Amino acid sequence: MKLTTLTQTPITTVSHNARIQKQALITYGEFPPLTNFSQATFPPGEIAHAHQHSDMLEVFFIQSGHAAMTVDGIEYDLPAGSCISIEPGEIHELRNASATEAMLVTYFGVQVQ
Image (cartoon, rainbow, N blue to C red; front, side):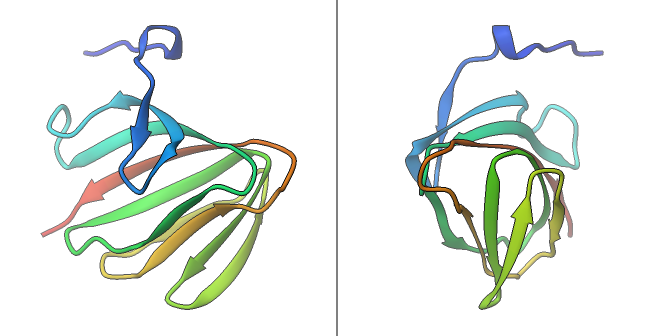
């Protein structure tokens, strides 16, 4: 069993953009095949730049704000309450679509073989 709260979890940055802060409630290796369970705050206009994972799928839930997710060249509009899943190998980029409001995202990855 592991109990974690956001008030006790350190704030770090995402590897795709140091201006985006995250809190990892579950980190890599704690509960295989889960790679992470995190919450990230995107300042207005910030982007987690295009990348892909060959060995994991990711699920993103937009808690507040407004996101745009580009997957393999197609952009999807994601208002608060949206959930999107990214398959291994799909090139994806997540962007805060607002120029004035922060965006809050909860996401996790699952390792696949």
